[in-house]
Image (spheres, rainbow, N blue to C red):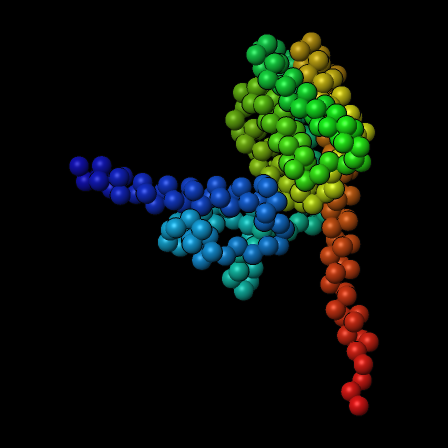
Length: 260
């Protein structure tokens, strides 16, 4: 009876901690919280209508997972990467995802119902391309980019799930979330980008369905290496912009008028 009471007493706190964890997770995934942004326990506690204890526990979990970091002064911030960190994450994703999808092709783990779901996600990218061309715009807007990212993320996550390796699936999803801290900064894809990605996804599905392991490996490797180059360009642009922004106050201070 005492054990049952202990479990029941712990449930509300555990539920609030999980809610806080998912709240911060979502803010990072959707770009509301960006690299270097501060995490304020009090604000989150007010937002969720809870005490600060479960918020603090959720933050500790996210620090352990590498999404947040604590600076020497005690503040909590969304993690900031070096260029080497970005490269390491991209290479990790390529190694794990290439292995997982090759396994799906080799063992014939994709069922017709899986193929249908994946094809809908491929078609969602084609729909965005058609929307873009019909509107006469050169690039996706923010709302359309969110739809693209959701379709792309779901496509890769579903394929990974078919590999029947929960640890690889979890590792790649967490890696993609870490990368998204920077990828939310990018400008919208243009029509050529969407056509290329849609074709790569379609070709990948066809190769897996045929059980063609070498072709599956080639397509996913090339696809992820393109993504790596894009992430590195984004990171370099982000660092250049940050450097310029930080240098402006010092530059202006050099040219303050002299007091008479």
